[in-house]
Image 1 (cartoon, one colour):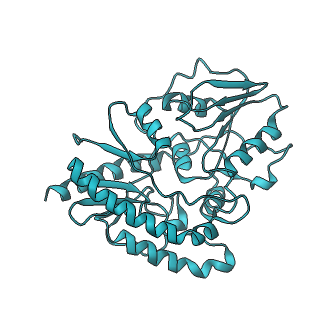
Image 2 (tube, rainbow, N blue to C red):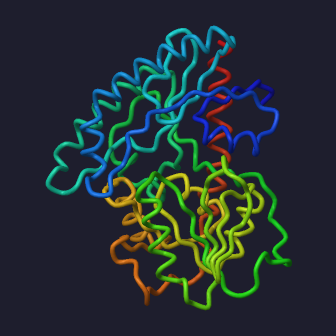
Length: 337
């Protein structure tokens, strides 16, 4: 839409943007990393680190003021960052997580989380939800079935593959049946999942393609028996692997789910233990019949992978294109007023 873009992110994400969007201006601007445990649930980790989060919000808010002044920025769009609002310009907050799900006996705490989240959202000019409205949606009760702030609007699902043409699948990267494992999220659970999947399929007649998601490292492939590990693949090659694979295994992170839906591909979702959002999404999408799910502790030899299927998600992807364009046009028109 003829606007100059400046991307701020941590170093590991900047490596991805350098490759995917050559020539775009980049600036290092780290987000908050709560840390994860192999034992404690994520909501407890966040509770313990709440003082650190508050300090980070104050620090990133002040840093944003300097960046806006130095680079003459007039619109800021941020992903789940509480401190990137500014009274003098248009700011947009992106989040699908308007209700943080708590386990059964702590569900009474959910309204507290909703209230705190609304407090921050109201500081922004607009809030974008990467989902579609209505009964057939992706995020379920995370952003549906509750009163949303008045500055909120749905923008459809987002995917790096949107607008990319279909790859040529006549020349497959590998022959024979393939499983693609998409690794994402923090350590130590990332490493734990990788090892459990390797132990499950290392002596099978399937090719296991591991997509490590580490763009900051070299892009060579490491081969060991039937296992092929890629630190990183450019988006066209990544899409080709997903479309060629007979089975896909991944975490139930929201970004991964949106990208699979954009390709009409199902997967076996293995939520990160203790992350209630991922556990809810895996259960919700499994009940809808779009994905299958299994807990990490039940991942073992003899596991039956879900049959390859293409989802009927075209209505969501078509509506997403319209919703996103309308939201961006509205944002730019408000800015010019």
